[in-house]
Length: 146
Image (cartoon, rainbow, N blue to C red):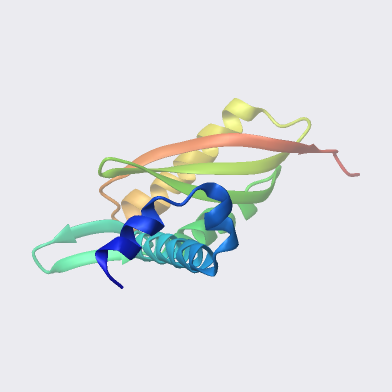
């Protein structure tokens, strides 16, 4: 391929490009590169730092953190189907918890109790030094069953 061929490729209009198999190969290559870089970035951020000291770092997977929140919610009366995502703000992490509650549940008291229980587990027992709190999103209500 010489320089004139390269100039010809750069001068393609849209119809010529769409008729050429080279265009589709380049498009597939571009999508593959984007997905590869996205997955590498996702894997790299997969661990959440708990704390670090002179002996090293302690990290936790997001799945383990989600399971911890789920088990804490299961212990509480009136909370169902918790789903947790982790939000990083600088060095601090916040838990974004989506859940279903009973219709007669006092939201303010429930949030405070959940925050207190999670702080006990995360800060006092697991020694998280970067826990920034929780944000609740109520995604539904469950009727009281007799």
